[in-house]
Length: 159
Image (cartoon, rainbow, N blue to C red):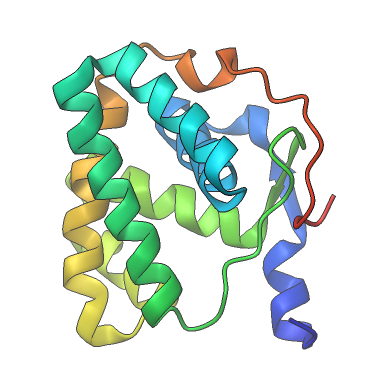
């Protein structure tokens, strides 16, 4: 990831604290998921604790499929900051806005944002998964992702 287009995706555009619950959770969960098995275990633990086993599993599956589609069909890899970083990167802001639009029923905007993330032929499927994931996040108590112990070393992130 050496081109200027990849660095731009990681540029800080705000602070995580400026996001609402669904948007903040989207970013934190993206960071956790991208960190590998330990982060994914933390994600599952938080979802199952907050939503219950069945609803948590459904939300996790939607998120897993969403991340898989982004990785396979993404226009470029999504840049992200370390889990404990307070900054919000440009790609993370786009991802958070996408999930929020999908969860609130703003499907036209969600589809438009999806085409920025993945190929156009995958945008509809990605939006459906974002809707399912975002609706799961809306059911959580607002501070759930902020309760996680995020102070751990990271290896593959910007800072």
